[in-house]
Length: 369
Image (tube, rainbow, N blue to C red; front, side, top):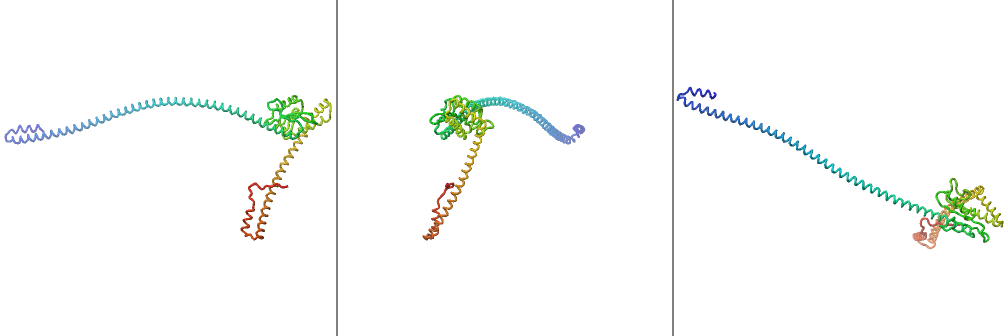
């Protein structure tokens, strides 16, 4: 029943009997109306609440969307700002690193140039010292070879006048004046070369000495020889001889000069004989004979060295055998004393051990004969 129907019934029942029912109906109506209103209000409230929740949700969603947009935008802005700052920082760092790198390269280049300059200076100093050392060493070796030659000549020809040319004075190394019956009958000039390579300048220098000392007898004593030569050879009329064969060659030249002096020839004849002697010495026949003699001398020296080594081995073996014989002889003597004097065995052994001489390793070598 709706409100219009209730109003129609109330109008029809205008009688007092129905007043109570009307009132009841009115109360019912008001009650129902209140209920309907309350229901409507609750429905409206629920609707409002739903709409409010929906609006709130929409607002929340919109707010979240706006927040997300703002957050995304802020994030993009922050990222862009960080990228710009990072790029700027990288640019600054790169510039700083380039500056540092350029400085390091400059310092390194400066150090390299300084090192190269110092190395060049030290290398130059080292080369200079090496040259001085080689020169001093060469001069020292040359002086030693010259002194050995001088000593050998003095020992071989004690009655001749043999002198070393003072260092610094222009000339040869050794001047040998041959003396016969207290007279100087000839000269031999020696040029000692103790180098590692042969030089043709040695011969040119020797030829100058022929004129300087007025003698054809100039001998180059060298440890090195021209290509394919050794021991003894003739180079452009100048004899070149090894150190060990210098004295034998000087002996041959000296004997020839002395023989010419003993002939008591005139000046012209003496010069002719001296020239013939010189031509013979620088000729092929003498060169061949002298080389054969040099080879024989070398062979003899090798044989003597081998013989000396063999004898030393024999002497060492003999010495060892003699020591063993002496040791056994002392042991026999000790046992005989034990038997004769009644010395206890252990005392005999002690005496034998005490009588044994103490020998160090390598001693006891005795040369006999």
